[in-house]
Amino acid sequence: MKDKETLLALVEREIRHLPIDDSEPRGLYAPIRYILEDGGKRIRPLLCLMGADLYSGAPETALSAAVAVEVFHNFTLLHDDIMDNAELRRGRPTVHEKWDSNRAILSGDAMLILAYRILQDGRLTYGAEKLPELLDVFSRAAMEVCQGQQYDMEFETSDRDVSQAEYIEMIRLKTSVLLAAALEMGAIVGGAEAEARRALYEFGVNLGLAFQIQDDLLDTYGDAQTFGKKIGGDIAAGKKTFLHIAAMAAASDAQREAILAPGDIAEKLPRVRGIYDLLGVRERAEAAIGEYFARAMAALQQAHPQPERLTVLEEYAYSLMKRTK
Image (tube, rainbow, N blue to C red; front, side, top):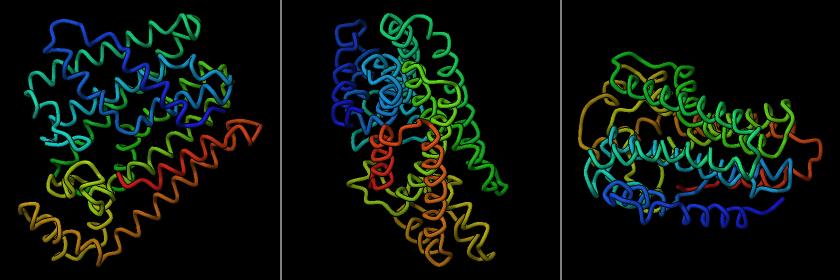
């Protein structure tokens, strides 16, 4: 199996060569290059290439699928930032802040179309017979991401308490399924059998759940300089994160009122975080992260009969759980 750095270099090269820099009108394509060039962690394309490498030893054959997933993911971020009124993404101004919301919406729409074109154009590399399966997995995940985003918005504005089960289903849709789909698409390109594909998909789902709860934790307890965006954004927006839900379930009436009381972020973040500390919310989140990560690793062991082939994926999964951003 090729190491992470080798695979990352393949992804970055492919993204740099996307035919968007000389395309007109520039006002449509410049925001696309802007959001893609600062890359982030490239988790999804790396997982896609690792999935292909696991079964075929030829990760480059899945490059189109990997980049399609990455372009789609960044499209969702671009639109999410508009919905969240976010000012920063990866430590830089968001697209709608640098340009405007109309430009961000239209460039995001173009990114969605571009993702499908990239996936379709890759059929000469991975084989045209695999395209229907790849499109099926990709389209299902894309729709589920939209469903998860809608649940997220509904939870944010709802007056009722959201259950932990509802929250887990929301983040499964919004975050986990795209990680899982990236892995499965790589496995399809690599020629994996259906049972192995299912195991790899379950690995991705549970890894995504652990990853998102960790993201909730970092948004409240992380460091702004390394996290790449303002700390406390979820608290300021009243988002029903894992931490919020756990706190509301354990809080006294007075604590609930304090959690829900308005205030600017400079005042509200320490107030709410102090209640979380009293209720042991951070420890509950860390326990949930550990539980879902353990499920992910158990599923991964079922994905290939040769344990030594799983080493790269295992190491990468562990590295994601040690992140600070």
